Structures are given as structure tokens and as C-alpha cells.
Amino acid sequence: MKLILASASPRRRELLEKTGLPFEVIVSACDETLPAGTPAYRAAELLSIRKAEAVAKEHPEATVIGADTTVLCDDRVLGKPADRADCIRMMHMLSGRTHLVQTGCTILSGAQRVSFTAETEVTFYPLTDAEIEAYADSDEPYDKAGGYGIQGQGGLLIEGIRGDYYNVVGLPVARLLRELRKIGANA
Image 1 (cartoon, rainbow, N blue to C red):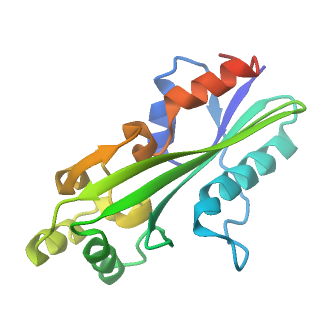
Image 2 (image 1 turned 45 degrees about the horizontal axis):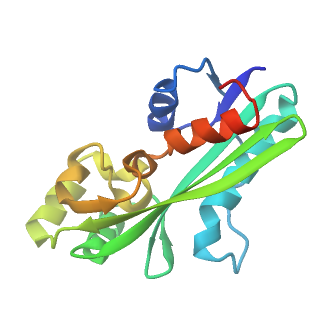
């Protein structure tokens, strides 16, 4: 059965390549607006379901993986920064604190459906205004949930993590591979 990753993220593509499984990427065109009142802790999994369903509708013969990553701080979802000021606001919010990174994953394969959310705690060092501004002046924060990338310069802001590193990058590949094997889908 053909395997499809329903994501535009180059990081997710790189991580799925680590499994050695052949796959193709088809970007989902689903609406990513969360319904009013959606609890923050449900956002990532809900969006992963939408992405997978949108692509599976067009490719019912395939096994489709949808994924979405959110950064949660104070029960709020921190998306991609809209601009430099938004990035600086997020970095101040994360500075010296522990927050949660969640990646929701959904696998649709024929009549089988598996959804799960992986969680990783990330702790930032206390950051100076100069560190925050220098990071905001880089190109790195603007296409990443929470405004940072652990695999790049953002990793220099992080004191530690508890959980799956690859989840913070954007795809908990070890768990995903195990879930694919459980349902007998290309793994």
C-alpha cells in the first residue's frame, strides 16, 4: 500500500525518511482554523486528523499520515510567529520556563484509523533581551510553532527536554513507526 505524508513540513519529510519507508508527500489543503472552544491540548491531534482525512479522501487506496505540532504555554497554543514582535513576545513567554510540545499524528489506512498525541516537555534557559532579539533577527523562528527550532539555533536556547526529541522537531518517528507496524501498514 502506498504511504503518503500529508504535510508541507520539510522537517517531517526528513524525519520520515529516517524510517527507510518509501513515501510521497501530498500537502493537505484542509482548513487549519480551530473551532472556538477547542481545548489547547486537543489542537495538534484535531489538526492531524483534518490533514489526514483531506488527503485520504483523494487517495483512499493509500496509507495517509497527518501530523501537526503545537507549542503550549499557560494553556495557550503558540503558533508560528506573525512577525518579529510576535516572535519576541513568544520568546519572553518561554524564557526560563518549561512548556509542552505536542505532535498529533493520525494514520488512515483503509478502514483503520489510529490517532495519538506525543508530548515532550521543553525548558528554556532564562534569556536576555539581546539573545531574544538576535534570535528574532534570524530567519529561523518564522515557520515554526512556538517560534523556535530545536534542531537549529533555537537549540541554544534550551536547557533541557523530557521526552522525544524528534517530537519537538515535528514528528515522533519511533512511535509512528510502531503504530504503522501495529496496523500492518508498510512498516
